[in-house]
Length: 454
Image (cartoon, rainbow, N blue to C red):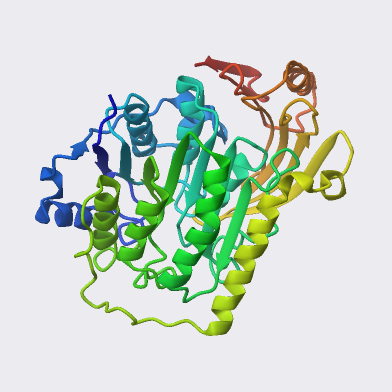
């Protein structure tokens, strides 16, 4: 029997902080907690609170290449934040609840497949870890992730860029005006997953009306046609008009309307740094929308309808962008992919990645096998520098969940070939086989290998 309850997990991570005065700190959740208790939300019969649990190191390794190992990049707080999404995911699949909201920190959507350190306040990607867990543990195939953070969810995009079974839509403040400087309309996914990535870069000052236009005319029709089994909302709240790091003009009411329309199975907190003026109102509104309760009374004290206006030209530009993206989606199967991605054995791209929190500069070469029978395995060569330290070089192979036998065999052979090489052109080697849930890491200097199986 399906439950009509909404599950909540609060995890403020008291023992984790980048610095005592950093915008990403525990007060982000404490004011929210006070607000919803004051409003009596936790007494509603349709609300069910869960205790968090820890994700395992293997849950992380299934998704990320953490350098040199998972233990080097995560604290207990990270494992609890990720584990909270897994707890709610299990509860949704088991029909204990209809949906859930993981109000947790640290956030995660800037953490990419390779993790050399913390960037954008993120070390591991909570939503991506949940996606891979749901596939492995529950046999879920098609998943949609809609990212509503002011900052482009570049980490989530990176992890699923070549995955045809994960739809990733991000609407955010234009990357020319804010970190991480990505998320443009031409970023549409790799050769096996073209148009499964859709980015909507919005101009600073975008208001509720344009927000709802994007949702109604792009997000909802694309998600509906994709027919995902699970919908996840990366629920960043720094699009709010009071946020100190963003320049957008969304309100709490609009976030609630968006949640009511999207009907996500799970919302996972990402950014949002207006600790008193935004987060208590936005989180309250989202919770009420998930629970099917009245949120009409939720309004910020300094807001009145019609307070913010946009110019007709900017509105028109966004409407054109939405039309173009929708056309790209609708014609995705008519595109000559060879003209875009070439006809060789591999499609490859070079990436320069900056870790703004840990001041690491990474140069990465990513290659994906162009296979007619599956999405193809991925090969990554990465070189990362931090200050005056010696650069760290890794070689990694990722085999997709949907891999064919040929790609799986070829990927293992490639890993073994590089492992046998006597020269130390790489410091660490990794193999991640999602089809068998096997993760292998190899330290070239120590000539020691670690293998874990789920």
